[in-house]
Length: 371
Image 1 (cartoon, rainbow, N blue to C red):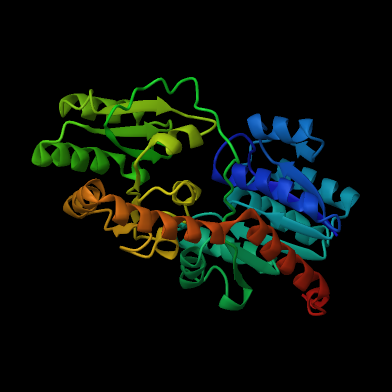
Image 2 (cartoon, helix red, strand yellow; image 1 turned 60 degrees about the vertical axis):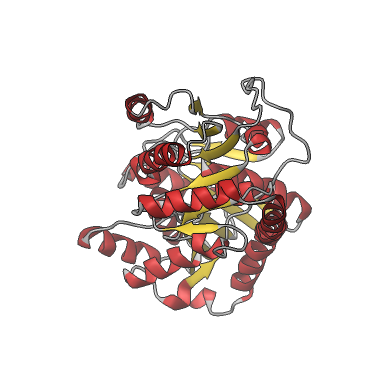
């Protein structure tokens, strides 16, 4: 079974990390030959995979919709390679990859939505037509699938939920950049791209009030990630006189040294399709606070293995942070055990098994050849 995965880019990020894990996961499935097509530029992950002998094809094209040259190149590639399955991920890859695969008469065509689409009438029509060329459309959570169905971009019978894979290293050295003496500080941590939808400004304001109300100066917030909001968030910290309590570490290739030293994880996004970073924190045993909008509500059982908050409610967020801060060791250990157990549900083996079942089922489905 020859599977061609098509993605927009392969440098860093959730989609890219998932492709990397997929490649490693399928090493234990010799019946599946995986090739990866990158529409745009490669980067750290593509270089790493190529160095390990994985088949990666980088097109270095502008993948903005529509690119007729890219469509033609994909069509030519697929006609020559003749994969059994084309599996695209992300809007740009879905549009160009599924259309090219349809014209190339690839037997099985799978699209994948990696977040909540925010489409107007025209784009709903475009993706409704695009997804008609697919035999199945994967969503990274039930919330994403429900959104696609509610927008009428796909019928429910085409939808298939495959949760993102999450894996933690067996051992991770303390990063050289992390030269902080925690002493007896309680550390909240967030790791994400610094963009408005991640709602980090609300987290900073809630954190400021938590310090002022509890009169506890032994609290810190670590912000891991980069993005266009970085300067605005730093300015907010200065305005609230939080420079001694909040540290920005920028993008980190390996977040696990930070997770190993933190005491709690917070992700107050206005919307989340899934959240690999949340599951990583849970697997590391951290009490976690996350938005109840989207995928995290399928990961966390509120009050048992973590906490869910209304991302528009600063008081709700502050209250949950205070509860986490004041938990005794027994409460913390109980939550840790349940968090780790839930995190294991999203293992790489489960992900690869679910994908393999989907691929095999569609290949064996006699109806595929009639679509």
